Length: 304
Length: 270
Image (cartoon, rainbow over all chains, first blue to last red; front, side):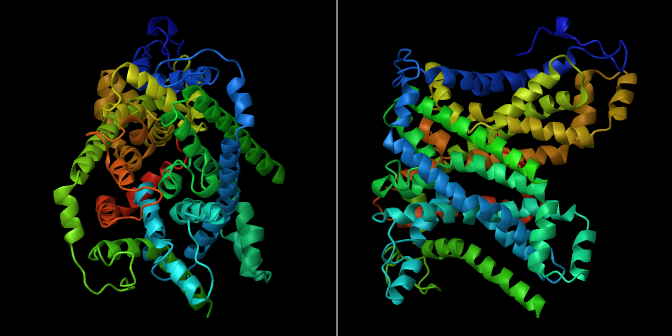
């Protein structure tokens, strides 16, 4: 990664001959030894693995595109992608626009105890995701979970993560929203504080309702931060693992209704030991995330 | 009127957000027979610490917490120094390959972490580190995000004139880093430290894949091992959940501002 310093020294355009040449390379060397090994080399290695039939630590043979072709016909993978996309669809708008709305509400001069609210909204970020999973398992207990007690009071059927495939993706989404809404709010809060009050005030003077002010003035002005929220949540959704593992295990719950790409890849790699196949799945997902991020950037640019 | 509606709405959201954690804590204080039973009420009647007592005396929980502390501390201390030194070079030096290297670092930030988990497993098992804490420390000490963050911070917090005048005074490049740069980039390092620590402290994927359930397991693995799809959360699991969260909440309450800055700085995960 770091070329021989003596030959690589740049002619120092700005500051003349006294400029240090070796020092910057020494400063980045320790980082790049580790990053090069566990980051860059791993990325290339994983790409190579995805074209092999590698199993366990034994090894495997080059099989061309077979893994990728098999993925296309793999029902579990398709289900995991579908479920992950479902979580994305249910969470990303809430996290971005909802986070902004919450920040917008909190920033109003009418709010009392702003600091307390901010701290409470941020609390769900603190426990590990494993703990978050346990908390919701407790809350959503089929018999004594609070929502189910209420449903029964109303004469409705209780929901069960163990038997009802339809609730898996909504519940997973709910957990993600609970965990990250306050986090997104804090990011949006910083963005809002940097905006000028003028357009907002003049919209109010023109008689716009708060709802209109939010959608027509605040949202367009917050576009950079919203875009950041969108891309960040997209990457987060495709990295989803801990919550899904705790709620649905690597089996993915009833009918794999709670299987996401994170648990699919983990199961294939570390339970079935199909490392080549799992690498192909990971790369396919990485490409999808990349495309989704680029599309979001494009849409945001075209919208302006 | 508008004030009442706004404050009321925020209060309602706050209660909904707060309730799951409240429920977890009060459940942990119930005798084990009352957990997940009709005897459980919104405000607990008979409160006890016996679940905590059993957790601490008869399980491997403390050991797993110790492992988590060791791993997270190592990741934080080493990671902050690696990233600060490299971030400084990217922010304040002109050198050949700088922009290309930085572009590579930025590009890797978009890639989901799960891609590197498998090749690193093979590499770590080849050098015999699978099952030891080093297997989860090494992959976490040089995140691409750390460079992004420190370069940004040092670029704006360290005046270049200060470095130049130290150079004129005859200070060595390393001396400048040590005595001029490090003393003024504390806040940036603190933010990165919180991000690194929490990433390591909270993570399940790496320890689950690399440590399995041996002596070196961190607390998320310990918790996950008590839980199965068809098992209800047990009294021990609930107590362990609360206990493992307390240290983070304590730090949060004491240093809220810096803490929030540190976590949200990590919004773009590496």
